[in-house]
Image (cartoon, rainbow, N blue to C red; front, side, top):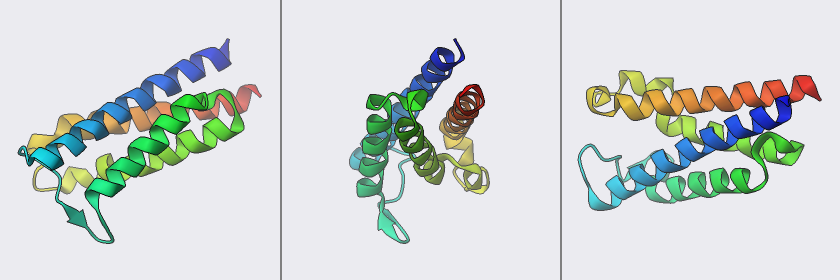
Amino acid sequence: MQTTSSNSLSHAALGVLIVLQVVMLCALFTQTVPHPPLAVAPFALGPFLGASIAVAVAAFLLGAANSRLGMGVTILAAILALISFGPQKWIDPAIAQIWPAVLLGEIAVGAIILSCVTRLRSA
C-alpha cells in the first residue's frame, strides 16, 4: 500500500514540475512577462528547461518511486527543478509575480522527497 501511494505522489509531483517547466519554456519563447532570462551562468535557459522536462518525463515513465532507477531519476528531476523553483527564488526581484510557481514547485519537490523516503523505509 505504501508503495502505491508513494508512487502516485511521485507521479503527481512530477506532473506538476513538468507543467510548470513547460509553461516557463513557453513564456521564455514568447517573452511573456514575467519570463525567465534567456541565459543564466553557466547555460542558456531554453536548453536547460528542455533537459529538465526530459528528465522529469523519463522519471515519470520509469515509474517514479517504483524502482531504484526510477527513484534516482525522480530525485534528479527534483534537483533540476530546484534551479528554477528553489528557495533562492524568494529573494528574486520578480517574486511578487512568480511566487505561485515557486511555491508549487517547492511543494512538488517536497512531495518527491517524501515519497522517496517513504518508499525507502518500506523496502
